[in-house]
Image 1 (cartoon, helix red, strand yellow):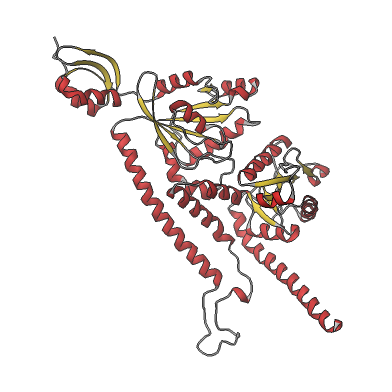
Image 2: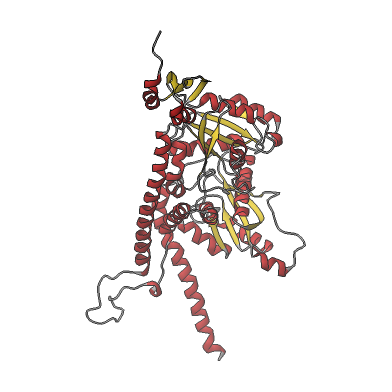
Amino acid sequence: MTSSSSPSQAEQSFAETRDRSLRADALMEEDVAWSHGHDTDRDGEQYDRSDRAALRRVAGLSTELEDVTEVEYRQLRLERVVLVGVWTTGTAQEAENSLAELAALAETAGALVLDGVIQRRDKPDPATYIGSGKAQELRDIVLESGADTVVCDGELSPGQLIHLEDVVKVKVVDRTALILDIFAQHAKSREGKAQVALAQMQYMLPRLRGWGQSLSRQMGGGGGGGMATRGPGETKIETDRRRIREKMAKMRREIAEMKTGREIKRQERRRNRVPSVAIAGYTNAGKSSLLNRLTGAGVLVENALFATLDPTVRRAETPSGRLYTLADTVGFVRHLPHHLVEAFRSTMEEVGDSDLILHVVDGSHPAPEEQLAAVREVIREVGAVDVPEIVVVNKADAADPLVLQRLLRIERRALAVSARTGAGIPELLAMIDALLPRPEVAVEALVPYTHGGLVSRVHGEGEVISEEHTTEGTLLKARVHEELASALAPYVPAAR
């Protein structure tokens, strides 16, 4: 019995090894094409051999819960993750900051960070991201920590994902998939959900893989299908890809229709000449807190990355009484996946169509300049390069005074504020008032009391310089736009 069963087990083991090898090797050719669109050929700085070979442990990333029973842990159902990054350029501190941000992303997605390691290389390994030897070391760390997922600090090709999973024997997720998962959890509106679904499908399309006869729906060849069954059929993988493309086309149509509705509202604001201000900035920089402080809007404020996905537009008033709209937008992050920038382009148009951008940066962050650069890159992508910008250095109460001084010195138009305590808010309001576009026509009109609606329009759409109630009506001195100036023309007193 033993001798008869042994060959079948050996054959089964050999077949599994062969299938895994074929599965991984089949991706290498496609990865060559994939790498043309990514910066994999860039030769970075040269490092000492010991530095290049070291798999650096990053301290302080673990969020493992202490004193939790197994029953309590099972109820929490948190994924246990190990983070891994490839340090190609910059300083060790910058590499650790990047991995710390990945830890915050993982926690926001609901994971439990157990460990984090960095591998120094001139460029990521095309097969396993960190190299085959380091992948084995990573496998040991995964076993030692009891992790069930590895999260890589970069976008991995389909082949790199497969190869790394084959070595570490647990699920491997890249930075792009992690951010997409967070967006999927936080999207609330119909448009937000549609945008996330579109981005996820764009990400998944090149990563669909089918292997072997079990996934084939093709007939013919020498497969014994018989006469009239041979010929080019459609494999399951082709069917899945076609269905995903059809769904993506449908999603794009739906998003375009929703965009039209928001464009109508935007045109209405333009028609009424209400200036608009967009709050942009790095995720978790305090944009929603600032919106609440400026308007009392009561928008969700949460110490989590990407708590705000759907744009919130509120009315606000300058100290001089001018009305304007304030829009809270989705937070940005370094290496924001291109799929998301494309999918959320319609949402980000609030930034491009605004008269003023409040660029919020976290003053207490270890590298605020990197946050500023990442946000400006996305602002350029949505075509908002000519919009005036105020750099709002938030969380000033928790920031290093030297960092604040450096930012205020470097940035041409910057203010330090604290949305939590209200420090610096009056100065910010005054700066907003000064930078918002002013109505171009100066008028003086005596409006009869029977035309009170016209006076209300001047208050809402213009800038009232003085107002006096006389026996004949309301005497106004104001700056208004051309359309309102024409409506006031009949009431302009004749020159003496």
